[in-house]
Length: 311
Ligand SMILES: [Mg+2]
Image (cartoon, rainbow, N blue to C red; front, side, top):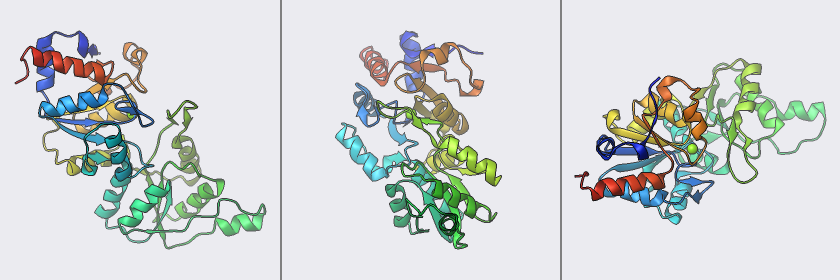
């Protein structure tokens, strides 16, 4: 297995070669530029500096709870100069898939209100949600999980209001093989906030998959569809000239592998130095370089520039 190098510890010539080897940066958000929307020191400066060096910047997040409009507002508040069209998230990825297959019918959308609003705004019809609380009787349970054959897709996203009834309702719809099963959030845990990690969707998804016997279509990282969507949205024609920056080996480095992008792992989120020193993941997920933080990456950019290595 090749060794994973700390970008801060290689010679300036190698740093220069690396920085010159990409024109376009796709960056993850949580754990790279902010943690639960709290900016990571030095990240905004690094992104600005990359732009100054002529690199295109796009954000590729697995945040399927917020709309890109809301994410963009948070970016601006945190000092990042970004526009909505610079951001890709699983909501847009799901919509692109539904449009691509010319989807007709109602959607049972399990997720946040912003997620549902985005589906409405894209002209999709949503099935009504079951009540949050039901009467505790078999009759009421059966009534509330009854089928509606207008529903032709179930989309499972992160939902803080997830209930037993919603999970049961998903199973009812998925009994019909023609009903699509789309997954927009598949995290094991969500490392958000001081009380985290929070339970991710994967545990609930496992139950749904085991009982229904259905294999979902994934639209979040890491998935073929998300990569295809990102390539189309950001007009990527030469993935070798694209650098993917992420903090997660299983979400980001794997996505970069699918896309054929270069990879840079940062240690401000889920991946730790221990993961690097004791690599337990597929070899193809391994980046050539890692860097402690975007702050350190920015210092490297500045040093290399001062030496007039960067044209
Ligand atoms: Mg992340």
